[in-house]
Length: 491
Image (tube, rainbow, N blue to C red; front, top):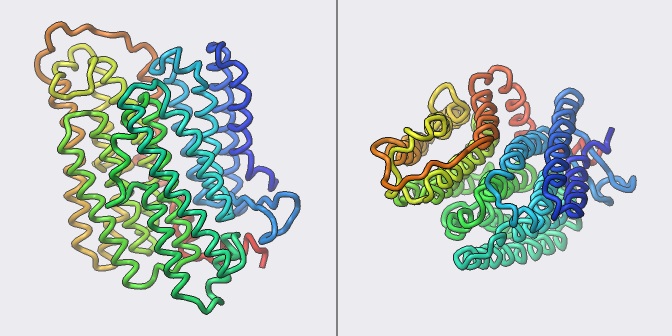
């Protein structure tokens, strides 16, 4: 049973190697990719059912007990995120033949995509801080391969910036892990959580905690470290943008959630205040960026930033409602961001441009796409009864419980501006008269994967009564780190 914990890593890794042999036989590569991602989704869903029925699954590789061996932990938080990763990956791989050119597909697109999925799943499932760094590097190397597909001038410039920023943050990350090991003598996260309570070097541990936060905040694109992200995420193919926007920043914020609920004490007032300020500024500056651009892809990329702020806010509140809101919003945002990146990619394909000023009247030719965008905007902004509403309602409840009224008001205003920023695409892109010389393009099969994602987004909202108990279980699990420590170290 314990071997189940590593399957979400092994299956996409095997799939990536297998499709590499068929990179020039695209029909076979596409078929294998679709079959194996569906298998992986089914496997992860089964693992999730086992975790919530029987408790966390701990794999001790080589039968070396923790903290001596490498371990993987499928617990409520990690398995929820792995399942969500596979849901949006299904949509991306099914739409890829429509949005990715044959030439780019033949340049090992499916291999890099599966390696990215494997790396992301590994980052969620590892119980070892050094292996978190290793899986970060796996997913980053896969993302380097995906971001350079195409090779135009703008793409190469943004790719270079993306690579350099991530290389620098990775160097700082592994150096900080080395310092932490020197202080506590272990890299097993459960063991670290136990040791930090015993070590009489709180000044050094506080410094390590701050540096790790800035490493993960860079990868999560939190204020003020988001400057590298928006343009880097829009230069590759829309399918790659969807994977990046839905997954890469979320691994960064997951790492903050994991580290600061397990290892470092977040109950200090100064830490909470700092996190709330960063969350609020991320919301404000992210939505300002979204409102300031007429590039529809860049607009969605900027909207990634306030969503990370909302997730950090729940951690800063550190109560059941706040953490439930963070987890709910994290799952919601992964799905809806993937859908929105795909939607604007399809819109740009159909309109022949991503500049909103050059669009108009698209509703006459693409009515289904227009109304799909309309629904997605409401889901993203948190309009009842959609999934964004449930997550934000929990966050607002947590904020009022902790007497943080100002950040609750900031969150509400930000939500309205997020709605307006996305509705701009609907208003200016789909209403009005068609542009001259407009040529309608075929979109056969492009909308089904997007509707698939919207189905899950809507389900998270209207099915909240069924889903919330799992989220609540996860939040209570995070509030009590002893559960994680005892399950890993078998104390």
